Image 1 (cartoon, helix red, strand yellow):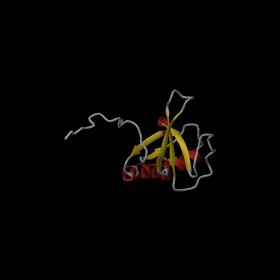
Image 2 (image 1 turned 120 degrees about the vertical axis):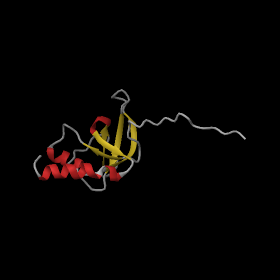
Image 3 (image 1 turned 90 degrees about the vertical axis):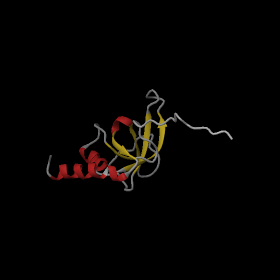
Image 4 (image 1 turned 30 degrees about the horizontal axis):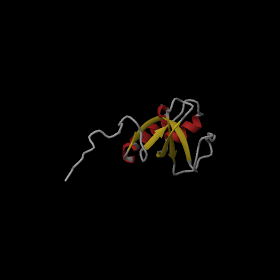
Length: 114
């Protein structure tokens, strides 16, 4: 009997992966757009490589709520989803509970104008 082990899998803990929950923003968006995305938790449903940006990853993130405040990017696909670059994803985790404190903190900051 031959037993094999995968000692070195291609897992990069410094990169979001499909199924991770995310908080994301973009410095070029309006305050209203940033408020929406910072107060909602999305889920990565696919990852693709961009040929125009030296092979950087684009993360397709799906939200449970409809949004019309966001202009659709030409490479968006799917309803209630948009894509983000890695530098636009602020926090990510396999567990949605890990991101809830960040959303609550952001909402409290807005509430008290911090």
